[in-house]
Amino acid sequence: MDSNKHGFNLFGNHKMNESVPVHSTPGMNSLSPYLNFDPKLLNPNGSQFILPEGQKEKRGRLELMFFTIGGSVISGSMIGSISGLYRGIRETRVLTGSVRTSSIINYIARQGATTASAMGSIALIYSLIGTGISWTRGIDDELNTVASGSLTGLLYRSTAGLKGALRGSLYGFGVSSLYVLLTSKERLQTYM
Image (cartoon, rainbow, N blue to C red; front, side, top):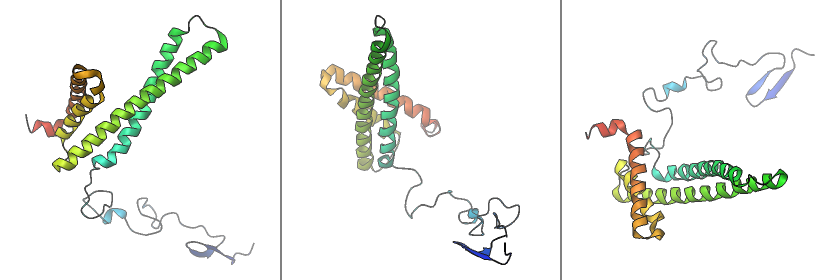
């Protein structure tokens, strides 16, 4: 092979038998091999992410809404499937063979879909109410989370009558308060 033969690549011509350096400076793994500068120099004491001017570093409720709904559907599906497996095994003790297997699979699929649908609906209601409260108040804090949880329970259980709706609201209040206590200990200590 001719040692003077040149090849072409996107980053310029080089001799085919020469190795292309992986790092621009030996021993400097944090340097970019193509831009030849340390990326930490762009923003030495700030965030690692480049954000548009005026944008907050924290994601808003509208952005988190999609994660909340999707996570709820997936976790609901898993919880429902496990519940369906348990119920299917318990209910089909008298059956044998492929009939039992098919029945258990039906229990798993039915319970998984039902639970995923319910949890997705609750997450959608919670996210929409939380986003609405956040936009109305102009601030996103723990009070929005507790109010969203309470109103979600009230709205989701509103078809069960007044007592059922109030029980749902209390349940939503309890779950959202527990979430706030677990995730915002530092911010809540200033109020205590």
